Image (cartoon, rainbow, N blue to C red; front, side, top):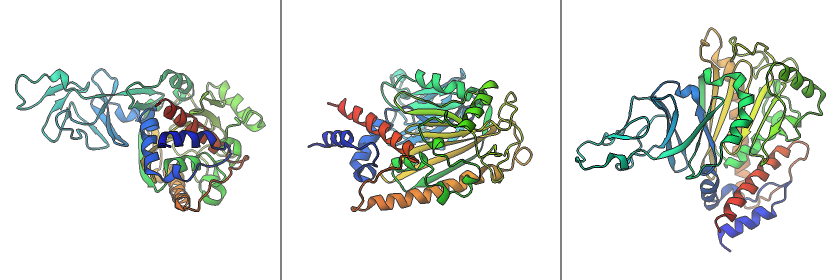
Length: 407
């Protein structure tokens, strides 16, 4: 039996209430196929419009084998390209963020316009057809202040994502923010273990003292039941929707993305040590209430998010190896908010910095246990871990469908 057939059979037989077999968390060949069939074919969150506010501003990201650059062109649009010179392949943009009137390869100075056209190729002769050597494009979309790319030749339709996300995110005006702080860590764990950890709070009481000051441990928050039957949540939804903030639970038909606005612990409006706002200037002047809960988004396989009245915290997941995953966290505040005046950076970031580090440790220990040949999948808690089950249902269904299509 070849690997493809074997994986299809394993994914078909996987019990809904159980974790994956060990090899799905450790095997380099399975990791390679996941990258090819999932990460190189899905829409991936890479950054924010506010990071690309000016003409010529760019950000770079490494997705598996693919270096990518996203740039603001001269018409104000966003474009993404494979970050590889068409001469001999050197990376063109080498920093994570920057600004340039044109893109110049540092190796031999081939020069590209912001729309990807080759402008100059020194000493290559007059007969070089520059039109054949523009930068190779990558699909790029923006919605609600979020920038997405897709590496596939034919990208999945982005419009369902746009229609789902826009009503929830536009009131927060994240396109008019700035990144107050950015943190990058490497978790010594498979990307699916990182996601499973995120999709439950079964572990929170024993591991996240800072977060548990404000984040409710109610299973509905991380689960997939919605929460309409919870009187407190239903009352909050009604209030928030009356002031123009879409709040009710919505999940895509295939389970890939979900939006919902949930209240924090009673009396808390923000993920801070005292539960009070971290930024005195709200994200949007039309949202004047301090308590608008936390707008939660997940979009598999690459992002989860928390957006409040005063700031947003966004998370980007990227796999590095079968047992290493990069997590980039960004704190967004109003573009005119002033550090030391409108917010204190330590107070803004301390809860999630601590929580990320605690999750890094938890996921590393999880991976070390899963590495053991003695590991066998165990059952999930139906009360606390239905979010884990839903994530793996999406993973198994999508991965299997892609593998079956290879026949």
